[in-house]
Image (spheres, rainbow, N blue to C red):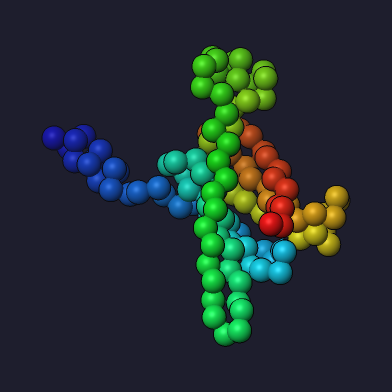
Length: 120
């Protein structure tokens, strides 16, 4: 009974948002939200135009391979970002390639990924 109750409450926790970072790029404020349980990074862009506020939602997820063994996925560097534990935004001015970047560490996958932020 106790185990079932624990599982029941655990399932009510939702996507478990674990990390957040904010940066400015492409003329707007970008908010990146890392969710542990679903291994996804949500991106919100906020742009102010003539006193109004526009929020746009996008998502970044790199699930990796699904058909290989863990060792094969690891050897081929195709694990994906499982459990985004920490994230850092790097502005274009601080970036080595002059493009804004998002760095993501995956706690379960043991990965460190760098995403280039593209302006649309």
